[in-house]
Image (cartoon, rainbow over the protein chains, first blue to last red):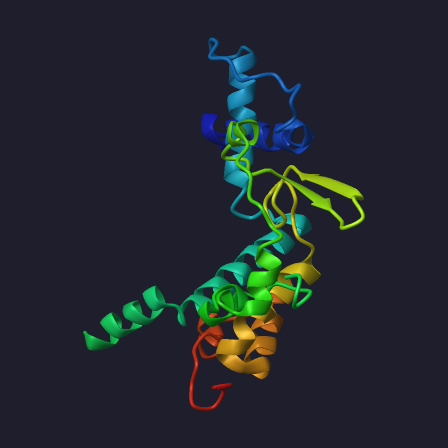
Length: 97
Length: 128
């Protein structure tokens, strides 16, 4: 049986699929709080659909690549920092516990 | 940078080189000038570099985003080269290469603990 909630989700998913590319565009309409069923309602459905789908949706390749850059850069900074005074002190403190 | 033709993490933290006559000779040619107009753009850090050669020729370059920030991102090759520069002196070339390889294929790493041996100096990978 279709509940109101699942109906909204389905509607949200369908909307999300078509509306996503415009998210973040400068000319995109800002979300305005209006009565249910108006423009605000459909924006909410789009947003909800986008959020609920996020769990299973893969990350864009560009985001994956950029995330790896940041992770590698962070690890490299941490490792190089172990040889500076604050890093040495922190390691000394941690190993004394 | 002028002497080594590159800048490494190690050389920029090397106190003895800060007093090295060769370094001081180059340093005497550099003047740091505060600019209120650039200051107003903070937190965006911008800089203008002007070079005057002995024969009077002038070069000028304005940088409106620091390399490696969101507005001027590094390529993967640059990020990897930077990581290699930072990690190799601490963990050695082999461990460093392993770390770069694992992070580059991070989605296929089954257990994040696999990274653990690649992050710490041991008697086996100690380059010093």
